Image (cartoon, rainbow, N blue to C red; front, side, top):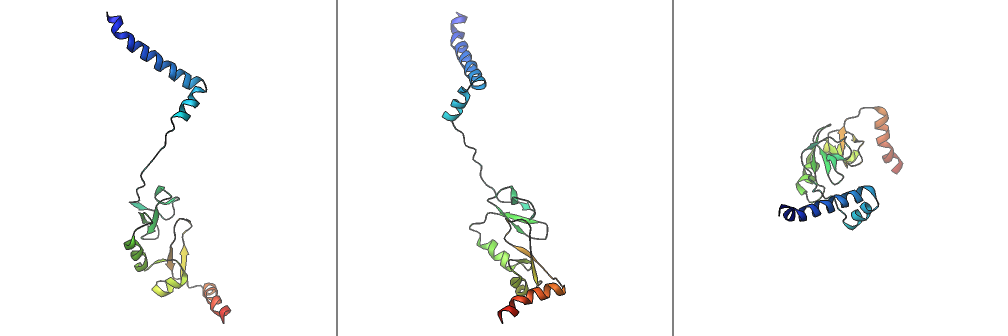
Length: 143
């Protein structure tokens, strides 16, 4: 009687091992994978601290790193953050252009980060004569 009770289990295990063997040793595995495709889905979390120099920032191309200091920042999701945009405008050293640095009074040159995912630079006071001449060129050309 015991054999009769374990017969379905034995058939099931035999069939399972046969399918696994076929998947590993033949093209049946490719057919099996095509029939049942899987998709890796992850939720993007844009929080925590980051470095403006790491690529991609925050370990995801969907996130942005807003610098607090020269070497550290905060991960944010780029859409829907009006408060973050306001913080960037009010930050004395974050800039998108040389004019913005001069308007904020924190320097005369906007040094961009080498990371293409960072839209902002850092205002620095560059006291070089060559830089001053370079910044005057567009004004002199326009005259």
